[in-house]
Image (cartoon, rainbow, N blue to C red; front, side):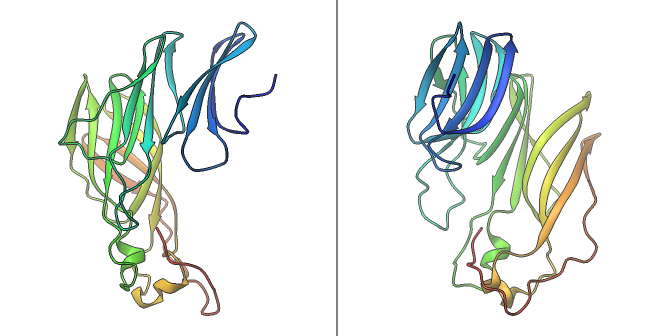
Length: 229
């Protein structure tokens, strides 16, 4: 049976003939849809002005996701706080983050376990440090027992963290995107600074980074790209 949206971003299943998907009209953007396939048909929920990329479904009547709200205030702003949504068996309702957790990136692993990150402002796009300042994470919080707790964030060159995997009590691994802080700022017009994926290990209340490339190479002088972040 065709899906109710042309672009599917995420799929999860609770059993035979019971699937949940998220997606939208294209690979990015907003106005996403959450759809549930059950008893041979699709049931959909339209999320006007919101984007969702994953779901944590506990049952057919209990689930969580995190939405990104559009539009952003302006091109220099890292974006409004993310919006956790809870499914009660009938509808998806917003469960706003506390006012002291202004995080644009939230990842829920379960109703009582998750991570939230605040990104730095992007600054002036005419400034030579625009590509460096934009998007990197500056603060972190950990959801434990229903409470968001601040966590010291010592990493200054991480622009995104994803795929959190709990492996033991208060121990996690994740994949992150890092940028090269040695990249010459006066070359920002060639595009965002080079970087690469790294592994982050959180254990005993400390973050450790593995796999950071030792020698990233700047784009060639003939490269043509638009600065952004």
